[in-house]
Length: 398
Image 1: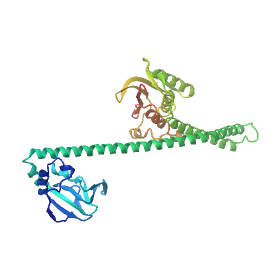
Image 2 (image 1 turned 45 degrees about the vertical axis):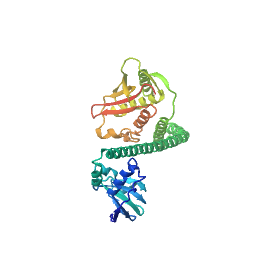
Image 3 (image 1 turned 180 degrees about the horizontal axis):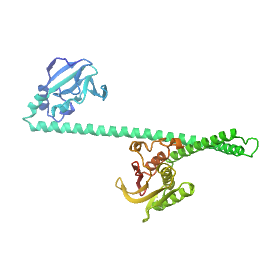
Image 4 (image 1 turned 90 degrees about the vertical axis):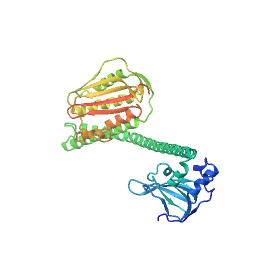
């Protein structure tokens, strides 16, 4: 329904008590009121339409109106109400631009309308009136801006708290699941190993080819299940608090490289840590060791495909959000990563080598650990045939 109401001349004191005009004297308010008109409109009347040219200010004298905005899908979304004593369309007095929202009468309303041209004709000869209006409009805009910022901050806080609560719930579920699965998986692995021993030639009536193959299949799949549980436990461990330690980051990298070589003697991977001065770091040793272990394993499995290769580790001073930090770089000279895969590298279960038994959880653990307890950031630089560089930037003191 469009606005179609009859107007009458407004009485002199109709703007008394209206916030926008409270700095005006009674005589000035009366002069403004005489330039406008008062009209009544039934519920459902469209008083102002979003996008239309703005030419009037409205003061709601009685009733309630709804403020609506169009969403990206073409539907109208209610963003607020205005009640008796409130103004709407006040920016039209200054810029005469397009309406930023639609206003529809929610009940029967009485409205004072002041056309921009008539108002400007009144205040143009009076700089004092113009100054009063601009001061009041600036104050109202500032209040609205502060309210919008405050509401946005509260909304973001609620979202962050909700996300954090979901993360805690997921962590608790993963931790509990891993704990519950550990014992039955351990029993199954032991039983599978025993079956394989019995199925070997010369070990009795069970030493048949028919038994040997399913026993091996059972053992292999149980091993995969154990690896999955360990990976989930590692992701859950990212949320656990570890004691902070004063460490030398470069020395830590050297020790992690040595430990990886001992744990994987069958991998022909050489890890070199660039020499240099001590790099004092206050952080969580177990978390960083886990990150380096996964990065070394990833380079061996994907960069070099299990063949011989070299990994270089460097530690250099850096800054992170204006705070002193360390930049720890792990670089290989392997096959590299296609550009299309870079955005999803750290997604859980993303892998290009599932056929070789990989689960796609290693870099998910790395990402969650670096951005979680280590308080840092991680970046990947790679292209096919040029190798891969992983750069971790983290504060020198957590």
